[in-house]
Image 1 (cartoon, rainbow, N blue to C red):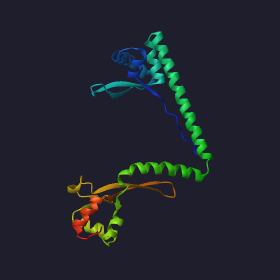
Image 2 (image 1 turned 180 degrees about the horizontal axis):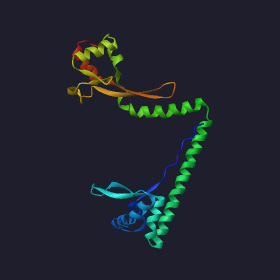
Image 3 (image 1 turned 135 degrees about the horizontal axis):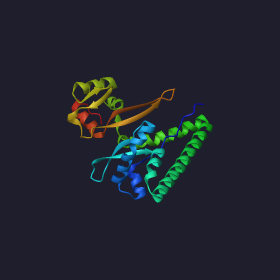
Image 4 (image 1 turned 90 degrees about the vertical axis):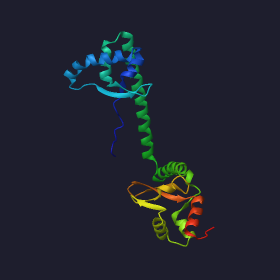
Length: 225
């Protein structure tokens, strides 16, 4: 069985360090900048500089440090601030270890389940997701269903609507014409299927509302209800 690594190195931003130690962020940033040349000389890497949005929504710089980098910076802090930082890292690592343990247990339990149980669980999750996604299209009709009301095949039906400028095809999908958007004539429905290799295939397609059916009836001139 192939083992998948679920471990990822944790980091802490200079903002978090400032909040934890009760220091101003600009002072923490300055301390990191002052200590960066020595770190780069020994380690060969600079500290990672990232951006965050302040309360005004403006982008500001901050550092994102690993535990080792963070504790190196903390050597310039007073004893109380350094102790707070060390305890915070222990708290983060305990939480991460617990989370990883739960993942391992869950994966192990999944491996012990019968294929039918796994499929049933997957069906339940996917089914609930599709129910939520397709809630707006629950009472709509597919192109095949509408085509039957006009005594057409779905291919002829789609071709007629294309020729009339009601819909167009792009990237393998039918789309309502731009001038008809916003009139609640169609809604999107999502269908999910899987290949024998477990590859997921998601298909989204147009369905017609009752307003859309009345619109088509008026355009095609065939009484269908």
